[in-house]
Image (spheres, helix red, strand yellow):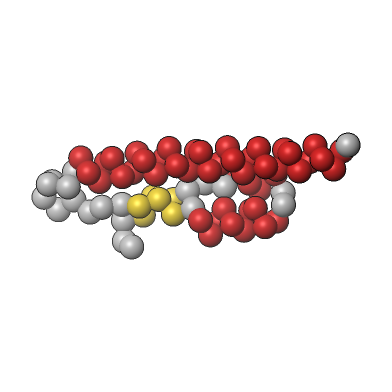
Length: 75
């Protein structure tokens, strides 16, 4: 059924993006830990939840696939 396939593709895209964001977030956290004692170092975080939520709510697989996280230091 075509509708079932579209739903499956959307779920796959969502799960892939969640895994991508998790991996990127782990890198940002590891960098924060590695530089915790560095003078004048500013911790960073990965922001993605708002853009990701909007893409998922749109239901468009391309929108989901194109969401990018943003590393920010002023939070």
